Length: 153
Image 1: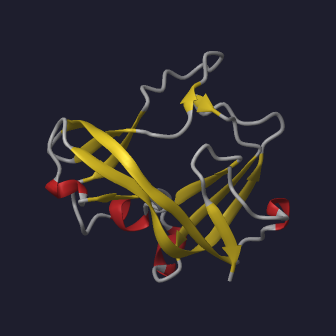
Image 2: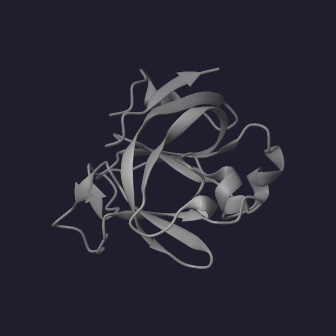
Image 3: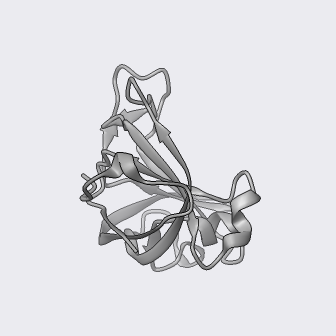
């Protein structure tokens, strides 16, 4: 669960420091472009209209916007992973800029539980040029199954 008071008060343009401890995970699949990791947090939402497979994809291209803008990281990096390999996933401490805030009533169906009631679209603070790129952000879900810590900067 994300730890931060006043999440409903976040505003576009604010900076947040995000972190999540690294935990063990297993590589499920590797393609030319992505590594799929069995996600250690959340569970499939049986009432969802989406069929989440319990995995998260990571770009294998270190210079791709998908990798640079992603909150979560793998250790080792995705381009060093192979199927069946153990790795760690989490968020090393990062400063992100809020570029949009979504309030979801009812909570949003995302295919897994818990369903978030607030979603913060964020980009790395050191890449403000990503703010205008449609697919260059990541999302902080509240509540989150991952043990996120959020702090206003």
